[in-house]
Amino acid sequence: MATTPVQGKAILLKVSDGTDTYTLVCLTKQTFKGSTPVNKKETQCGTVLGLGAKDMSFSFDAIMNTTPAAVVANVGEASAKKALNWFVNDTPLTVTRSIGTSGADEYMSATCYLTEYSDDLSVGDPMAFSGTLSVYGDLDITP
Image (cartoon, rainbow, N blue to C red):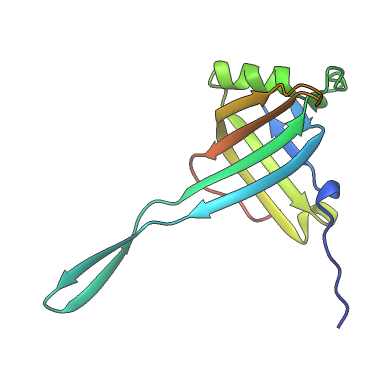
C-alpha cells in the first residue's frame, strides 16, 4: 500500500470577515485542537458518563509580512496587522482549512473569534506573531 503524506506547507488557512476572504501568509505552523470534557458521576447503578460541550480552536504561528497581497475581488492575504485588527475589534470570522481537491481529504470550517494574539520581536530574528482562533458553534467537516 502506498503512502501519500500531506505536506504542511501546502495547506492554507483561510479567514473571512464576512466581506473579504484572506489567506494567512508566512505561516510556520498551524494546529487544530479539539476536546470534549467527560463528566463522571458515581451512582448506585454504576458510573454514568456525560459529555460536555466541545472546546475547539485553530492556532497558528507566522512571520510578519509587511506587504501581503491586497484584496482584489474580495480575496487577499493577511498578516500581523490584519490579525491584530481582528483581535482588537472582536471580529467574528469564518475559518476554513481544506486538504486535497475541494477538501476531499480533509475539510474544516467554523465561525471563530481571534481570542489570543501575541508577537515576538527577538533581536536578530524576523518579527513573529501567533494567534488562537476559538470556535463557537459547530465545526463543519463536509466540503
